Length: 196
Image (tube, rainbow, N blue to C red; front, side):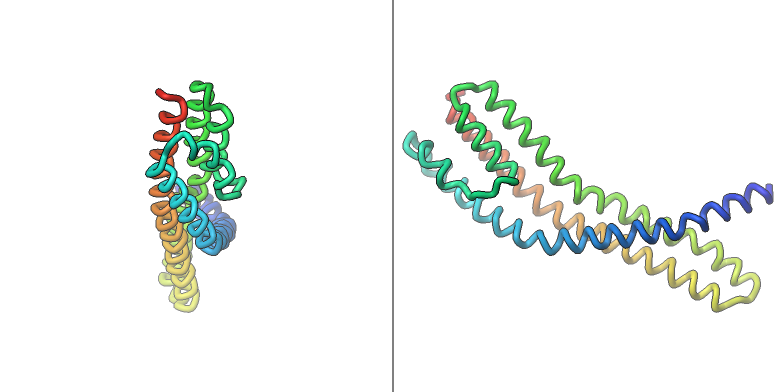
């Protein structure tokens, strides 16, 4: 049994460095997400205003002018779906397919946030538990410096993991609300365009 415990101890200590590296990688991704989030939020506000105006003032004339007034953001799933529906407004099956593709594209966009939410705390917890073994060994042998260092690593990884998850969750909430409202608007426009 001692041999098995020693093997598990060696394995867990061996993965501490990869866990910390992955946690730092997620932290960098979270910081990049926050930096780009403000620009995305501004574009989404502008696009939401345009779509809301379109819904409130919908008539046959606004359909023809719609494509030229859209925000020119080619990577936006909303603009892509709307342009697809406008170019195939006589084909209701194609428009339904475009709406389904929009939902898949949204899930892909939101997966970046979900990775942070799920893996941040997981890696933070691993980074907390792994150094606890050496800290307890240091405590048992009277090596207070080793124990203090390992506890510092344990607490730091927990904090970084929670920070990563917090950033992911906060940005996910805003993005989900925007995409849910956009799906509602696209569904309204689908019914207006196809007459179904």
